[in-house]
Image 1 (cartoon, rainbow, N blue to C red):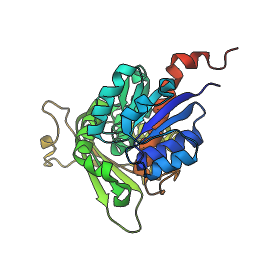
Image 2 (image 1 turned 30 degrees about the vertical axis):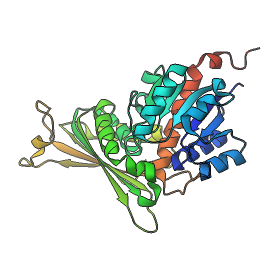
Image 3 (image 1 turned 180 degrees about the vertical axis):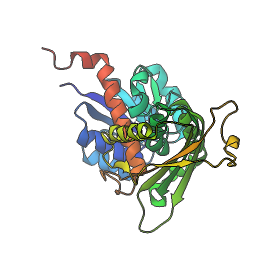
Image 4 (image 1 turned 180 degrees about the horizontal axis):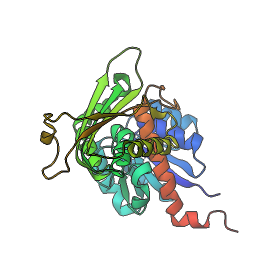
Length: 317
């Protein structure tokens, strides 16, 4: 079977974990290059050790390398600002881009929710770790009943937040909030991230709070639990932390300040508690925030590869 060659830009935690997922888990993708800007980075050293072609002078070096023409898909695991520059250089060259930064140049993609809609896009955005963990739950609720407001809180171990994550904190909240609405279907979305300094480090925890009207609670619960299973199919450490909670709102609660004008009347609050344990392919198990991003990106790239012309003839006699 012919495998689709991919490159990973960014030799930090996310990019290195993604490389190991391609090497260990994918039957359809092949590492064509690992790209960084620090020749001494651990990610580049590990790539070389595993026989992956290494580029240490960024996207310009990738474009100039022998074998670049054979690379079909490029993951960008750098930063939002860097992706803008990288995408501008790669866009004319016919590569599919999978953006793991909050740059959001292309459409937001959460595999369990809307992947089939964007398989023809040239640049897809993986939102954020918090978005990948919580937007499926918002979408699961909104397919049963309108969600005038949804709020998510992503708590991650401080040790799992590298320089790129910290540099993108503002973009994290903006991109996640927008995707809660665009992909999750909420009338208004809000995102909060907490870098938890606890020792020993705690695994990723996420809370989804959604306002709804009068709806069938059993139908909402079943929809959420089904969605949890769909995400867990590609992120094995993704799970409910405790039972889904429903609470009737008091008549004097000022929820009108949260919802857009003209929204359906909110009568109940749904609260969903999640946790994400990493697979520890490269990073510790507590770094579920990075694992869910790389796992989702791998699922997207494999689906994109299946749509490429070469995939149609793979294995043909």
